[in-house]
Structure formats: C-alpha cells, structure tokens
Image (tube, rainbow, N blue to C red; front, side, top):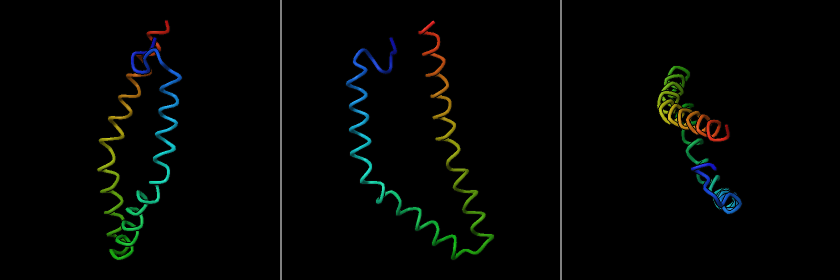
Length: 83
C-alpha cells in the first residue's frame, strides 16, 4: 500500500481531478506574468533579455531540483513497497 496515496485511492483521484478543474480558470491570471516578462525583455534589448532569461532559469533550478528529488524518492519507495 502506498503511504502517500493511502487506502482511499479513488477518493484521492477525484480530489485531484476536482482540484485541476478548479484551478484551470485561474490560468489566465497566472499567464499575466508572462506578458510582463516579455514586455520587459523587449524594452531591455537583446543583451538584457538574455540576462533576464538566465535569471529566470537560475531561479527555477531550486524548485525543479527539489521536485525531481522528491519524485525520485517517491518512485524508489513505491518500487520497494511493490516488491
């Protein structure tokens, strides 16, 4: 039995489906940041836009690394429990 999903897997599945359906309308609000970054990059010129892109990648590395490690640990745990 998976520790994270618990014993009530169908209920969790419905919960995540509902969560996704409720957050989809907010995607237009979240996309506002993208237009601001694009407008700023256009004003900075090519060299400034490259610096902005590198800064965005630098800031994204920590969450991406954390999520990757968490996913790997979860995968290893599930593989060990099934064996």
